[in-house]
Length: 218
Image 1 (cartoon, rainbow, N blue to C red):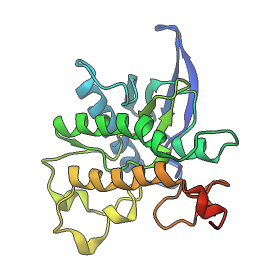
Image 2: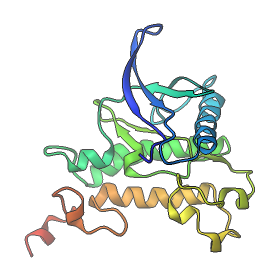
Image 3: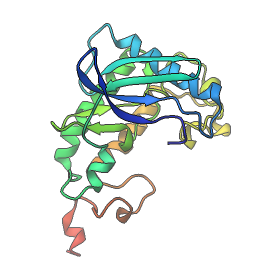
Image 4: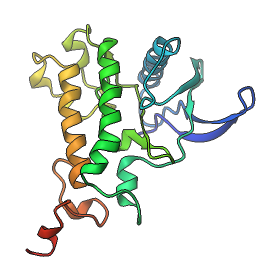
């Protein structure tokens, strides 16, 4: 986690419902940077809280950043991430049905963000949780940016973003919705094969590609 977050279950006594709290924890990262990410995530959640949002975007509950304290509270999704689902014995299998049931709603969540001028920039299997009903929830808006942001700002070194978004030799390349589309393609490929870009099939649980004939050598 890099020291910047701790997600725990917590009972919200005012709303009488369990929530997930992500707490500020500086760890190995700079205090200013950690708080900037929390404030950014709160900014986007509050931007959406007065209007309808897709069910595939995690439901925001509350949050605050000030002094030594800071937290973001969302609905408590009791299921694990998509990656954990694939690794769990008896969990969800990578296949076309999984692409439809999980990938379709994730596409709608990204479309909603893009229509509202927001690029997520951190879509990956560990940032999509699966509710007990089977419906997905896209989480973590701490890397999100406005699509109007200067590319040079977004390409400054940032340990919270993946390397492909921080390469100093690519600062002239615009990022934003198209970056999410690329990440979405990689995510849908993961749903279909159970293998992320650059991984061997054996590195994700015990599951291989969806084509079972290839497993049997046919």
